[in-house]
Image 1 (cartoon, rainbow, N blue to C red):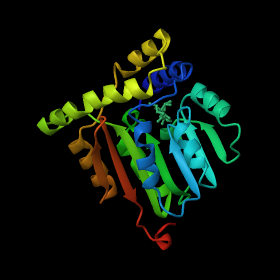
Image 2 (image 1 turned 180 degrees about the vertical axis):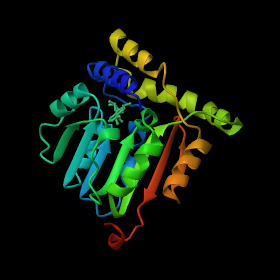
Image 3 (image 1 turned 90 degrees about the vertical axis):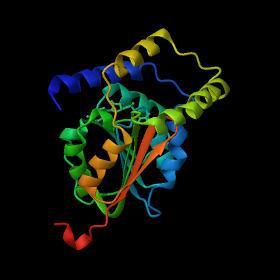
Image 4 (image 1 turned 120 degrees about the horizontal axis):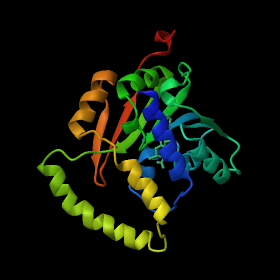
Length: 232
Ligand SMILES: C[S@@+](CC[C@H](N)C(=O)[O-])C[C@H]1O[C@@H](n2cnc3c(N)ncnc32)[C@H](O)[C@@H]1O
């Protein structure tokens, strides 16, 4: 990833963090699904691109330690303000592509709506190394439509999205600044199709569960089956 693109992403999210909005969205709709994918014994979790932290605060209720990592200093600043009652979250401002991954450290690595900003080819080998044997990688990211099936699924997703927006976010007014920051952010975003995601994850990790979700998301769940004796 070149330096100026990383800088642009950091600046963008620094702006978005200033207009942090609570409420229903296409990511937190899947939080409970994602929690169910974690291993039963789950002490240490890394959240990549943690943002302002809705998900890792759920995580922090059930695990010993969460490392919450984000490129944007403002995201981490807001995250800390929302998380004062949690003593088991270690916040780090860092570019995950430059991060020094520890070996066999995490029971789970999670990432929500972040990996489309990253080179998966560079990232995935590090995630593999950083997971304990039996540890799980759980990713949710944005999805690009690719076929008629996706278009049919939009016939359900669009009205349902509208219903959720009305019923759950009716009191939430997006400020013009928040809308502008988000518009600028998505202008250059690129997402994988389901078949591209399948190809990339399975070629690097081997057998992984890659699922399509209704609200323009895919998830992957991969378990590290490497025996502890094989890790140097
Ligand atoms: C769309 S937000 C998602 C935030 C959070 N996971 C959520 O579900 O609300 C994407 C986050 O990824 C972070 N990010 C982007 N590139 C990153 C990188 N190279 N290293 C670490 N974090 C990164 C951004 O700063 C941003 O907070």
